[in-house]
Length: 155
Image (cartoon, rainbow, N blue to C red; front, side):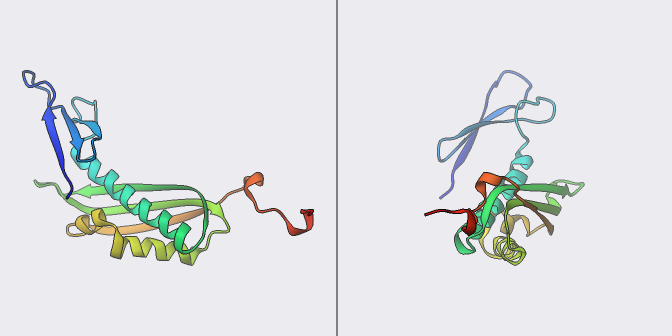
């Protein structure tokens, strides 16, 4: 079971700032644009989607396909309905994967598995929003990370 709670931080003031506590004991501030001390709750949904798919994709790339991933970023942009409840109506997800000799097919399959099978946040958001997913691969140029050339290795 997943649990969370929020509590108004300053009950006698007009501000709408809350402290959230997750079931695993983590705390963060929630706010609105006027207060500016923490994210809006809907922003956490976007961050949750980015995090959920990131965990899936990097795990699949490293464990199933043995890819040498050295960096990874997921960017999410979401459009909302104009009227309440302002659910997400369209979501754009962009994956930027850095590594050595990454396999495009492995990345595409990892993204597909996340979106169609594993990411629980994505499964919920897809109930109201269309997804448009893109990716880019950045070849890592770090010399000390590259495997040693067989000809240059002495036993």
